Length: 244
Image 1: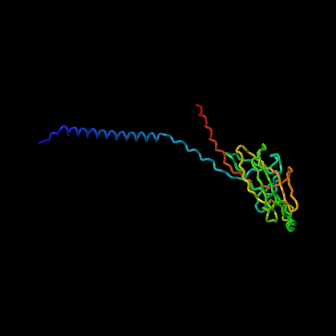
Image 2: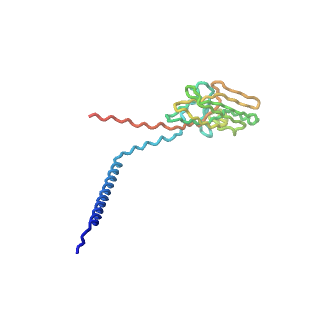
């Protein structure tokens, strides 16, 4: 004998059917939303990656030396005399490469000694040097000062000997003594700077001499380098569309 469904059973069946239909519709909606969202993400263009900033460069500086002392026998460096002066155009001119930010100028500063083998053997060669120089822009604005101070007693106190002289072995009597490594930050807008001597004091066993006469060689520099960041590369200009 067949069982006649009650009204409660019918309602439960209908509710289950409605819930199943609602669940199916929700699943379809979720899938559609995910598909649209994925398509939207794929359609969004990515921003181009900016180029990395230019790396810092360190290279020998371009230098104009009014009085070249000569090449070192041991180091093979070029040594340049620093002259006492007031006009930046008369000093050692350093031309800076195109740069972004503040470049840094570095060099070795030495005192300038006239070597005498006779004075060394007689124990009368002692000298204490104090040389002061300035780094200026070409409009005569002082960027910074530097000082080198050292004592000379024997040949071992020389930094190097200079070739091209008339002395024994073809050496010059003048030679660098003492070393002070100088590092100076240059203003960004400067494209050239000048190195000028200010004053020199020499203390010997029997006397003290001060020099500030314009044009007198009073110190020596070598190993002139510049550290800088190149300016960012310019983007090529867009070409106008060709006319039809």
